[in-house]
Length: 470
Image 1 (tube, rainbow, N blue to C red):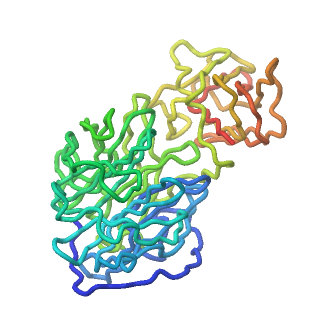
Image 2: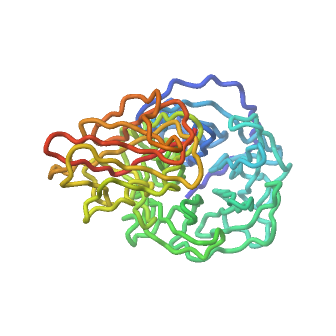
Image 3: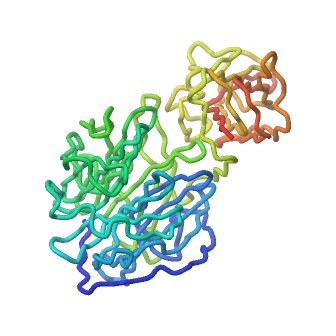
């Protein structure tokens, strides 16, 4: 539970800060303590918006006065971009720069924050706005968007998450003390569009919602502190999740996606970046860390073929670098897959189901294999209209039972009348336990083919094959 009382109003002005050196491990930044992370992907950069923990060693209350931005171009090495908003951004506020999230709309970036309004009641939700992911940010409204005076507001108005659907309708979820709330937002992003409702189906909800969408399905992750498969002590929290076919619910609880962390609070967010999914969260693992001196971590998030999420493995190494090229996303899921041969007990659909394997031997999801065929086999993607493609990544399958890493591979594209080698393609690597990326000058094509040549007396397989738009 987030609980701190700062008596006097604090007005701080965000200064120009040079990004600190990047850090390749978990926690991602150790020069300061950061908490309550919310990710946002813009082009080839992933941003994390986080509060800063400033409590002294041994202090048993939160001291948070500013929000910072972290950034990465490969999801593995991160830089602290400095203070981009603080309590002084909101003249009507006085303390408590708690959990926040940024949502883009119409070329602007709206920063929804949990802040003590220093008036009637306790916590409010404010909105700042900037022209870029790094601001500068200013108060967009001149007063709280949500406060204790908002009809049907939560018992603790904190932890806003905002999601904009494909039709342009934006939704706001928030709330602590088991009091989850939701409302639509007007297109100006600073006014409610209808009544505040109490969503149904978020089993054991405590606080910290985060909403996203994948393959037409809505997901909500949130902190829970029950002892029914979540944590062993209600002083701690896990991250449960639920899904829905409508952004306002009702929700269907699916289980725990992130277990107990080393801090008592547990606050997480989800983003897809360069074709892979990630979970950002905080823990107390930085040197000198604790429950009020938390630090942001990043790890891979994997989905099963039925859309359920696998529990995140918390690591100290963090995810492998995923640099990417260009600004497009993975267009493989929208293609129809074809092959020269697939084993009857394997599944061609596995190659573009959007999964992130744990290793080359991972059989937790369906896999593609072409045993007992030898020599060169191929996979291909066919799209209903031409795609501008500039990069692919393939994760090889190796079962040590006849399917092995290939000897070589090569990309071809459909010219309109025949297949031809993709010009200027980089080497097609065959390493285990990682995505092997091939880059090339952009080609426009409706078909892409991956030719895979096996080692002597062996066959080949693929767990995931991604193709990225330029």
